Amino acid sequence: MPRSLHDLTFDQLREVLVGEGLRPAHTGMLWNTLHYRAMADPLAREDLPPPLRRWLTRVLADGSWMLDVPPASSDTPSSDGLTRKFLLRLADAQEIETVIMGYTGRHTACVSTQAGCAMGCVFCATGQMGFVRHLRPGEIVAQVLHAQRTLHTAGERLRNLVFMGMGEPLHNYDSVMTALDIICDTRGLNIGPSKISVSTVGVVPGILRMAAEDRPYNLAVSLHAATEEERARLIPANQRWPLAELVAACRAYNEKTGRRIFFAWTLIEGVNDMPEHARRIAELLHGLDAHVNLIPLNRTEGYAGNESTDSAAEAFQLILQEAGFPCTVRQRRGIDVAAGCGQLKAAKNRRKAVVS
Ligand code: SAH
Ligand code: SF4
Image (cartoon, rainbow, N blue to C red; front, top):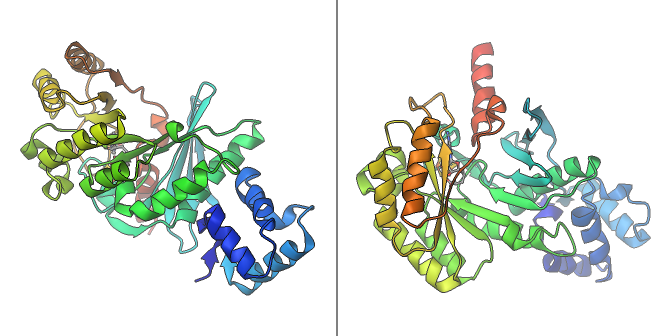
């Protein structure tokens, strides 16, 4: 398997180029081509210095290096025009989801970190698929570049990024952090760390590592239940990292970094959307610097639950706000393109199953 140039940070790229006898100054040129201009074919750039062009032509042709430019096997706009969802096809034919959410003038890309997911959350289409494999840094960066190219044709630039697509980012920690180093590089995509959110189901060692390494991204923690029993029913990974340990890690993160944590709560009718649940969140998170995001469930094939009513969501929100927690109900957008994590891929698998 050839190595991918998109896997490399700036310093790693320079090391490779210098090792190949090229000038260190060529690094900036190639980096600018791949990550600032986001060119799918760097050889299409006419002003490449001849030695760099010769090297690139040779290594791409002999297969010692490759690029991560996965084609979109589907591209689905939502009827409200605010969401566009892509299935990108990787070299081994795995398909991953990348979504562009275009809230008025503030574009956000939502990227995947794994093909499938090992965490098995019962309401999640990706969890229902099981784990296939981790993505390499280049495969994560490629999704951001794809979003950037798409927006560029509309004369826009990508500024916000969330790791809320398929997979559990902190189960693929090293690749995700390398990808983030590449994505935040000011000579390239230059997305500000404060405009990036990493969402985790609660991989405790990963949260502590982010704090220890002082990673400057926003951290979102998917909570969904506020007792061990209820959470274990929805999130099998709760057995590995129980709620008590998770909340302790969140407190440690708060203290070490001084950064607020964004807790996500998927509202499922009759399961976790009653006033008593809201009150339990307030007790559990007491003293934490926390924001709670309420997200009505997107229905999936493999789970019988329904989304909460608007009035239940509002009552839930009010209890948390009165307890002193900033709390928002996230608008549901692009439902018609199955905008929930893993749902487009799941829908495609169902169609396949019908055909075969
Ligand atoms: N694995 C990470 C990030 C990807 S999932 C995590 O779980 O946090 C991103 C968010 O989508 C999580 O908060 C997850 O709980 C939520 N989610 C998954 N399936 C959903 C569904 N069917 N409806 C609503 N939210 C869902
Ligand atoms: Fe994995 Fe997140 Fe889905 Fe849970 S919600 S199965 S952790 S992608």
